[in-house]
Image (tube, rainbow, N blue to C red; front, side, top):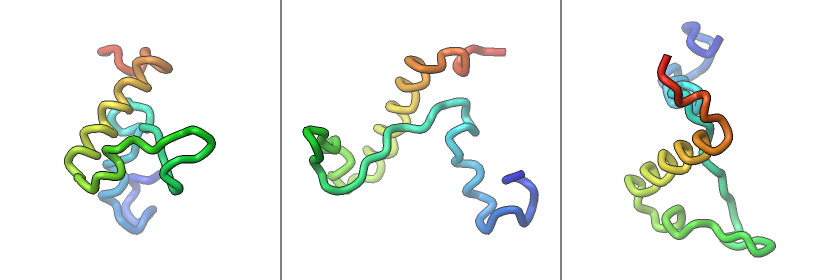
Length: 75
């Protein structure tokens, strides 16, 4: 449905959906930077968007490999 023209406001955003590339979504963090012993990774607080994008991709790959390795298999 999201790729039907007019279904969403910004059609290009559908291309970045986590399921578009067979990877699960990376972990998501918010404020505060530390909560109940859980810390936001330093890279996410760095402001370096290229490093953040790489980190997200690596995390998505590792999470998919751990939880849904079937999604990584070639057809």
